[in-house]
Length: 242
Image 1 (tube, rainbow, N blue to C red):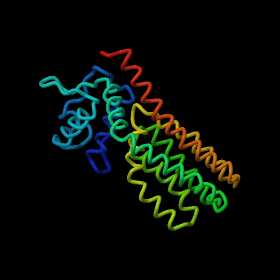
Image 2: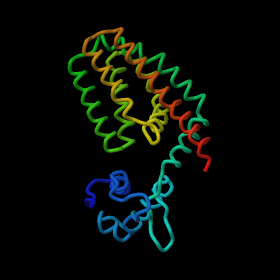
Image 3: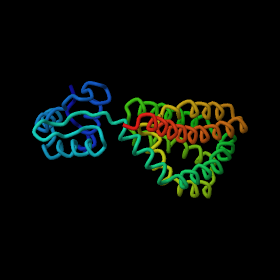
Image 4: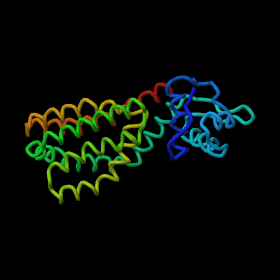
């Protein structure tokens, strides 16, 4: 049902494999996961590591541990929606400021990059995009974050401007938090795929205005996705208070 672990860190590997059981529907809502002993045997990990996996999954809202009965998969949608709203409400001003900074830096950087980009640079961007899609399909949020960051940072680097790269690098930590939320449920990371392709195509054509516009559209769409998701959750909560 699941494969023995090979790579490290062991706990993250174990989490990924158990999450795959849940996301794939092999263990459905209401059904019990393997016990700590069974999980230890299946994955070749210690009981303490298996216990850590269950504790983490419960904290993330995926399972409920019932004393003497085991760990059961639960509907995590409400948990993620509450978490998403809390993040937005707590950071609304910072999110707005971050998007303003991105709108200031990235479209013009993309414009510059369109005039300096090489065929090898484009091949690298296409490879990053391919890996990004694979990460989305595998629901690996941390990989999505790293690859999306790599996509946008690559465009900055193509500009060959050390000051621009230095300034953008100071925004990355804030962007990582933003990406972690917009790539996790209930947000939809697939919405970044098409805009990335449009940016790559514009860069291939070395079309400065088209590249500039594609990047602006991408950032605007990200903002629209976040605010739209918030409105949808709030509206749903009002209509279904229980």
